[in-house]
Image (tube, rainbow, N blue to C red; front, side, top):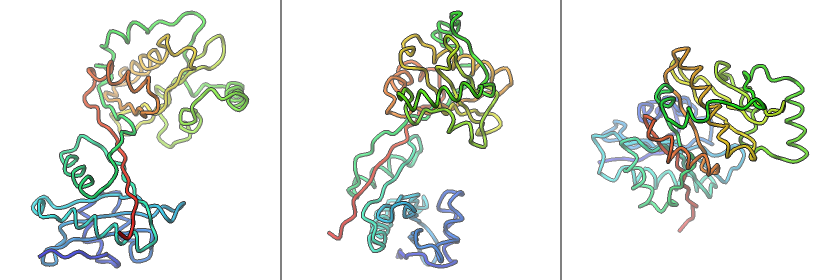
Length: 299
């Protein structure tokens, strides 16, 4: 007989193995922090399932489902459905009216998760971005990488660490006067991150002005994440962003960093299609980050 309880005290830590390691500290805080909601499922006192959510610090009416997990030996017994139902009721009792979830596809449990959400009346999942992983050397074998490898004399590449104060001022001023860079692709917000990778973060100049960049981050000793890439709109059809990718890939291969991860939000339609139709055959994997939500009511 399974029991379901809101976890309020130090016993919550016994459920730590049923969520991501990064959320272990949240289970330690359930006794003192009402923004964290943990629902435990147990069988004869032994933890077998956990639902974990957190109320937004910026909007007390909204929460995020962080994880929901059932021990494999106890699946197909309705535990996941019950966990989610009890979790939603507890969120509503704490005045939350909306809960959302973002998750990655490509895991063995993805179909079960999506089935659970569907039968629990969550919204149809929407793709938010592609997360692609590949060997940089393999990507360099794509024929179109070589097609755009040479730049006309009016262009030049430079290490992003060498961008000048004048370049920065020009980008910021022109963006303020007449925005030309999508907000999520402005470069300066990414270069400040702790794991910024100077090895192959590059800028592109055209007729002396900075018109493009690829800003990267080292997420593991053997892996670089291509976090932010952009080329000015009037130059995009010339394949200049491929030149940036080509040179960045060459640099990491030269330093024996084999893997790259590329993140492509769906709002950038041209790049999204490029990955799907051109880049995907040269990658190890292409997964989706999807989002879904549910409005909570008493009914």
